[in-house]
Length: 126
Image 1 (tube, rainbow, N blue to C red):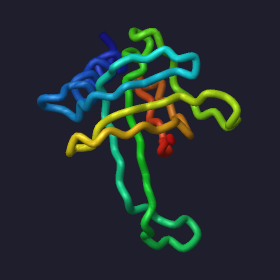
Image 2 (image 1 turned 90 degrees about the horizontal axis):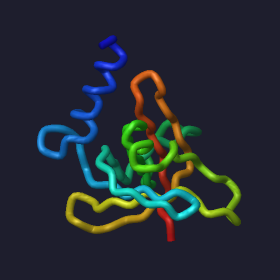
Image 3 (image 1 turned 60 degrees about the vertical axis):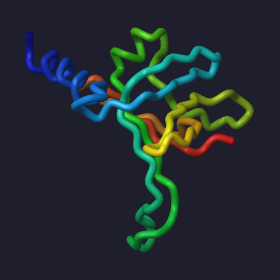
Image 4 (image 1 turned 30 degrees about the vertical axis):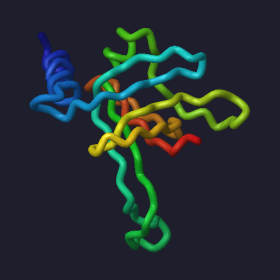
C-alpha cells in the first residue's frame, strides 16, 4: 500500500469515526433527489473575516468535509455548487451540537483528489 492509499484509509478514521475522530452524521441529497446518510466533519460558525477590511464581522460560515470514496459507495458523486437558482441544488443536512437540525445548499465544492475528500462551503437553505 502506497502512502496515498494509507492517507486515504487514515482519512476514514479522522473524518468518519464519531467516537475518536471528527465524525458527525450528515445527510447529502443530490439535485436528482438521491439521499444518503454519511459521516463527516461539519462546521457552522458565526464570525467571518471581511475580505475588504480584514475585520471580524458577524456572518455565517458553514461547511462539511466528506470522504469521496464514501460518497461514491453511497451512489452519489462529488457535490458541487449550482449557480442557476432555477435548478435543484445539492443539499446537506446536519444537526448542531445541541440537536438543532439545519439544511444547507452547497455553494462551493473543493475536492482534494490527492487525499480523497471534498470540502463543501454551504449556505442556509430555506
